[in-house]
Length: 409
Image 1: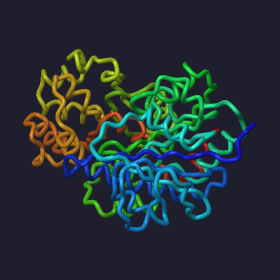
Image 2: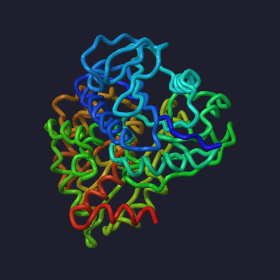
Image 3: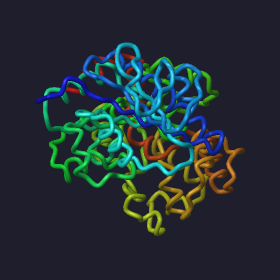
């Protein structure tokens, strides 16, 4: 029989090896706070469980009590793990504080929670994937899950950032995935559950992984109050993004998009932008397939860049478009380099002086000096980031809710 409530599980890690990685981690914490507040307003959601290794996030959700790894905490204090749930604002809210620095296995931890807490229907959310997911959208997902005994509802079947599924015990029928990307696929292929993939909008596709995701979030009107305050506290140079937005709704403009672009993202751009889109789709799956690790990743744009140099490369992009969105990681992989996260992130932020790798520094400087706005980022830029930017661009001239509703039809 369909269960009476859905259990929500939010997993938010904390990678703070550098100042810029801490920036992204704190953004994910703010998104988690907004997600919890929205979920508390959803009638179909019962308990809410937050799994994190960040004591600061736990303290943001609870009074300042001493936090002990392996304990469950809630808005009214800390209780041993073997005691009952702490009630918060009318429904159980738990915090599972993980020991910092310990190896984390997503699938095993999710399975432990489901078994230990007797969950029947689960709505899992990755900490950075719900920045634009509204209370109404959460409610629709939870209500749909309540109405059935067997189903997976996923934002992306092949690369999951959040998924709701029933029965929760299906997790015991699959090989637990190390990361969440394979969750929906495994629940379908190994547990035999039917799957419903959600319509592709910024709310379902944007996952905050890099500073570029913060810059693409900033102009979007759907950002929650905690995330908005955090974004406003940062000194983000979004002038190039503001310029690029203008061309997405300009029928006379041409915009260039390059990198690991999916067919669904291309279809979205063709349908939902007014401009012409010049697309270079290259090296999708380069990491998962092992091509990058084996040094086999190749890019047509990368060969051209090597042939003509950085200045001519960006000048050519300017001859072909009025704005460019580049998944720079494909170009890095083509050159056989993979800079540390700090260098990649400072490149996204257009702060070349803080980049250690000399080529990445020159590349970033050339992008800044290009005759057109060039937005640099990773895979998320040319997937969920573009959805968010398109919605933000249209929100300037029409009601965003009407635009998003049209996408669902």
